[in-house]
Image (cartoon, rainbow, N blue to C red; front, side, top):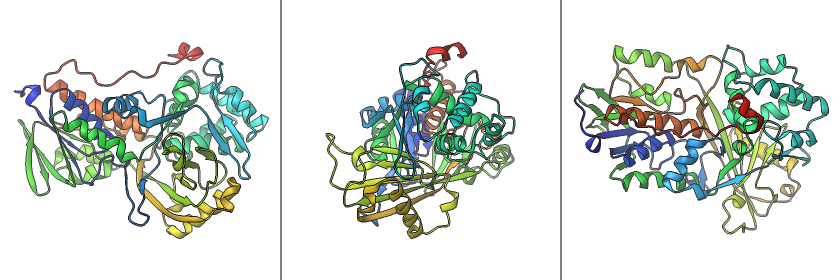
Length: 468
């Protein structure tokens, strides 16, 4: 293949979510001329924010968090200069209806025992629950089980888990992490989450929460591309592409543009719509037909007074699963306003898809008052509900065999997205990994044969080092 030099190679990145931004940023840094196309008027994809017309407030389309094990995402934040906009927490507060709290935090014990003291003290679980959880954790320590078609709920029942342990620990952790019900989640996906967040090391399980609206983070990635000679085109919808031996032609807004390479960093359902209607595209189209999506709902509430001192909490036994106290998280200098702005999150929110805004807000207020006494006296000033119907792919058993790698049948066309074969479930870390891997392929085909953009995983600590 007669390649242009790296420094003149033109790369189109289609999609301004994390996968596309990661690919565009690292390629721009390494001498490629990058043009990034995003159909929305802002960057971030499903991890974005915008000014909501009904409230006048800037809201995230959904709360996103990261863990200490998300090494590539953390490196991406460092690269674009927003690492200081993430606030890290070492403790999680699990609240029962009525307000009783269980605090899960690491101890000085070596991994995988660092969270054991906190779990043993947790009043939300009884002794038999804790014994069952410990036994299942022990089974997950040596390795991540293969996907043999079994659901994680079935695996838990085979490993003697109590109903309370399932509902208050396993379901609470995994539905939030994987955005799917545990009776539809593969054993491999669930085990990986537990391995990385609870077993590997204490730093791996730290939770990071953005302290600014999400688009404030990712607009920095657009600036990063621009200052390195690239272009970011917003409100530009890619309609189709045509792959040729010497170039790829992209149809955007009714106009054709030619590039040396294209990275398609799109959700799988959007990708289906722009694939050529040719036999060459049929294997990929068939793989994509096996994917399903799972919804997530964010409920934004503004109160006239502070309803809790907590900055975030896991909520047990109810529809709402997380509370993020955004007026505290976004506060400057540690000072928050007199009121409370909270975002409540319902992952795998299939039961809410057909409910009206008023029904969802009514349900959220009723449940919130069960956890926070002060909410009963507070007045709701304004509210909104944001449903992401196709938030993530469903990590059900067997889906991994259909997740494609970055290469396609077209030598100049590459794929990125959290749904591709990243080795991770649908997370921000998986999205960034996919972008870096796709960029590596472009760089190597263009002549940078030793290009390597992925950063190493966080190493295990304590006794977990015995298992690699």
